[in-house]
Length: 138
Ligand SMILES: [Zn+2]
Ligand SMILES: [Zn+2]
Ligand SMILES: [Zn+2]
Ligand SMILES: [Zn+2]
Image (cartoon, rainbow, N blue to C red):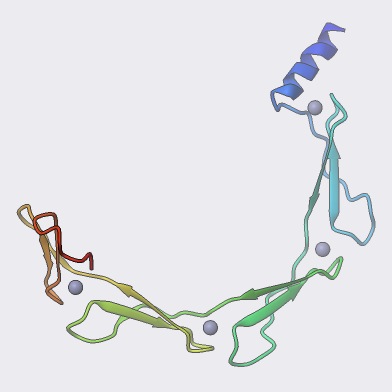
């Protein structure tokens, strides 16, 4: 009696004694397991997705399907190359998707470190710091 009580207290604290995951429905990706102490059940889905497939040559829309239950997932998956500086003086780096051409940009400044006060970028000359609070954050 006491042992059973202790087991249930352990379950209350989240320490369930789960059996192995089982697949109760053939051809489905549903899995279920049960706690040997309090009989609580848990369910999850574990799909066996194949590789992503791009149906259109120059689009990044892609699909994959589960081998077992046939569930399909859709995702936009771009293939970005590395970020490169857009121009020699600027600090804007651009990466382009090799499939659809979509661009991503980010600013990568080269701050002149040394001393306190505002920092200046040695590439584009933008300044960032606390001395002049009216300055726009670059
Ligand atoms: Zn339990
Ligand atoms: Zn599935
Ligand atoms: Zn793309
Ligand atoms: Zn800069």
